[in-house]
Length: 303
Image 1 (cartoon, rainbow, N blue to C red):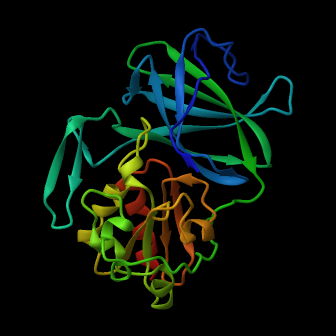
Image 2 (image 1 turned 90 degrees about the vertical axis):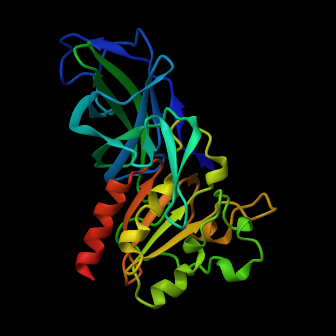
């Protein structure tokens, strides 16, 4: 299992008139990419990442992502897309805001430098290796360029948009004596453990399903995705089933059955499933309410 927030030290180079069709020169100083998307496939992808310069996460920059076909020499530029910065709604003034099941807000005393995530929508036309160049400019500073290689899969390993969601029979609150055995949040939220995925599909109810282990969220871009999902319940809880599934079985060093059924090999993940049981959106890694809510509204408009 990959806990997302993989640090890719690809270095950086200041861009001073380099040709648009060629990658930047060899790096001279470090701009680091913190990838939160591990599964990229042929077709359209949400490519999410953090940027770090020195020891500081970048949160105010103009960023673009360029895609290069590495089969050509030199590599050929095939696409360019803006990477928009999505600010986390559950972080205020550098502190993580936790929303309790009763709606009360608890501001954690410890500071966090995770403020948000950059998101670009990129397309790969074939499986195999691709070159990615990330261009970032902060204010009037020179443009920094980071380069890396990614692999596009021919087919997704996890359920993707348009596929049926696995009919998992996840444990719910009534199955356990202590909710902490199926929810590592502090405190656990019973609202996220009232329904089985299979039952909600049988009842024709749309779902937002979050696979995550909040207690062990430790990387610099491992954000509070369960709290992000929790913020949607007051607005949509009467029309949508919200489910949190832990990655690991309690007391065992093995994946939960639902994680195996969904074939997840990283965390966290959020899936939006419509009333017919079809996956309509999926988000790997750090995700904001804005992104999930936009997908959820599309599903509800079609119900």
